[in-house]
Image (cartoon, helix red, strand yellow):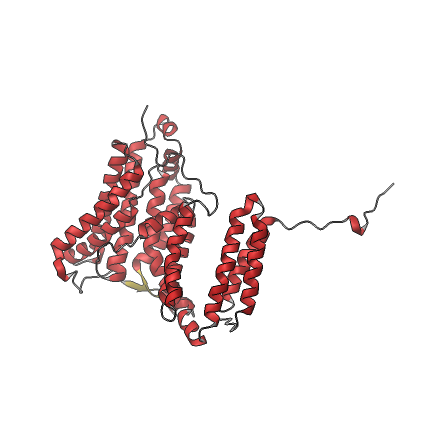
Length: 403
């Protein structure tokens, strides 16, 4: 006998909790975007409704233990979107268009992103080898000073990059010596490196330039115009007309480092040493030598990010001018799960929040201050492990003892 299901017994499949959480985050983004160009809704009512719905859906997702982080993110974004939308709706359309000229925002975002890319790539290479590099901040600061110093003495921005990278690599070598040969705690060693860099750069700066500061006629890393992109609407003003050389280098290094780590034999060996150094040693891999090279290269990359700050963007050196960017780059490593592509996404998030903070100050000091704090808040969230499940290389931070 055939049993036919009645309409009352047929149930529609339930929507997965994860999709609800992702939908809530998208709604939160839309709630703010509605008040921005080119849509420019001049009332905050639709945004408030969408923000409340996003927060309510996020609250429902919070009940599922497996998706609490996604639910918390949806609730937070929904609640943040409401005051942001109110602030945009209460401003004149001219002010909003001035701040959110998207081509200019992208160009500014890449400016803030560039030093973070170099620092994050350096952190990935070091930690993939098994050495935690808290000293990225200090290595970046060394690049800031010695990049300017090299460009001044050698009258060449290119030699300035070389000398700045060499200074960061030397500091990386010091960190590697303490971490690998003396088996010091790598977090303590990295912290000492940061303090050492502040002292060294401050001393050399005063000794070389005194109270007058760096000269204003130093050769700076140039901006380049891309002929094929320069005349394309929106793209040209954003990235085609006058993007710094080091910005292009940093963006190109992301696929290069990814290819090296995941598609070459040397990258496989580096990752094996960072995961199982004892097993790697038994098959003939040189654990200590590889880690020395990785930490030194890490310092050089971070220093190039510092060279960009002083010789590519600012054109001068100031005390402690990295302003925590090395730590933000380290957070980007965690955000990106020790993958160059993921780290690029994290640095773009940090960089664009900084760019918005800079531009928002033109009509709202409060919003500008809020966005200035956002990269550091995201850094704390990343370090606390609240964004996804990030698993560091198994041997990261553990001194290697050869048996």
